Amino acid sequence: FGRFWDGSFYGNLPYFDGLKLDPDLGFSLENTWAASNDLGIEYSLQYFVNDGRTNGSLADGALTMPRDTIGDKVSRQRNSFVARVAPTYKVTDDLALTLGISGQVFHSYFPGNENEEVDRGAVEGAIVWGPFTIFGEVAFQNGHHVLNYPTPGDPSDHNRYVMAGATYTWDKLTFRYDYSAAAYDNRIREQMHMPAVVAAVHKHLSIWFEYVYWRQAQPGNDVTFDRSANIVLDIHF
Image (cartoon, rainbow, N blue to C red; front, side):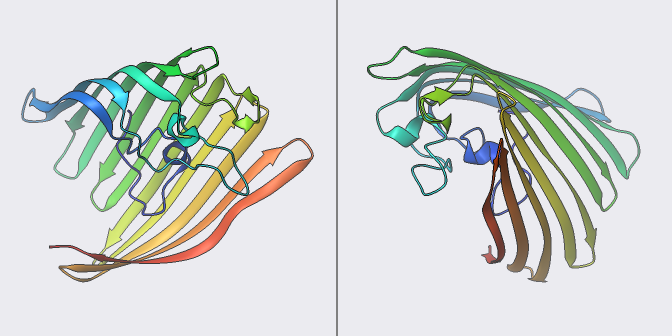
């Protein structure tokens, strides 16, 4: 659903709510159509019978209730349809522009509670200009896929998400800044800031340095979810 990822190791708010990197059980058609030498159209059409019961969404913890259907162990997402189209136009050899739209609809099944139909939509864009990349995505969700977030027994029926960032590559260093935000019924808001540096020390080894600052704001009670410096060794072949 939407842009695949923001390039980080730590993650982003749509990921922690179960919207990104969410493997499910079903069928997927994915392709890129070369409409011309300068225009490529990436598209996908997917149908999932059931959710895959695993993703990066937060479950029960000291600061949060389950943020996705899989978190309470008994609820399910079923009959999920996802569609995305994202054309990329190559303006020059060094400049490419991407604009995409996505949609998703599924049913949340809550044993002992009323089931819910959930609709999602997203608009994304990206500019790649030589060593610079700037991207952004705005997504919305109508309907709830959990029963107890952001408030126990009072789930949000209108979620809004932002995922954005910028990167610059200079020799073996890549400088990156990622930002994500979420608003739940406009009563509780979260923001995540993540500057990072990636050093390609070898063709098979990169070292990632990421700093995360994650805050939640609600009336009369602001909470820091995480404030951490993270080092990742990325070994690849």
